[in-house]
Amino acid sequence: MENTENTPGQDNPSYQPPLNTGDQYHYEDRDLKITGQTAIYLREAAKWTKFLSILGLIGIGFYVLAMIFMMLTTASGSLGPLPNQFGAFSIPYFIILILIMVIYALPIWWLYKFSTNLKIALEIKDQATLDSAFNFLKKHYKFIGIMTVIMIVFYILMVIVFIGGAVFMGLNSQV
Image (cartoon, rainbow, N blue to C red; front, side):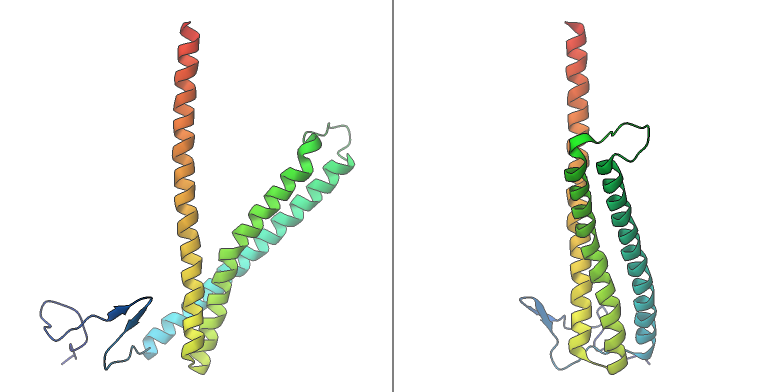
């Protein structure tokens, strides 16, 4: 028979949810434990998040190198017979793109730190390192969530501007 003392559900009147005291949940007289199967899942998650974060960091590195190469070739005018299409805006344009890549690197770095700290925490069974790992995961998803909201707002604004421009152009053509 399975132990339902600490599991939620209508058929379990003895279940007590954790007490929320600020940012931490406290469990009275019970500890949250990582079972062997959970540790296997977490190790696999650590491997995949490390793989994905390394790929992301490598991709950002290639992008930054490509931007630097393009900036140097456009600034020196070594594009051959092609005109310099970027003109005086090339350096500020590339600086902005590199800053965007640095901002993009933050959540990928946090994902990498999650994976490495999680692996260490599971190897040495250290609660502080496990807490640190999940703090990095929280930072990663919080950043991704905020950026998603910003992009949705940006897209909505672009649709409004596009519709407004189309209406304005339609009104101008009738005059």
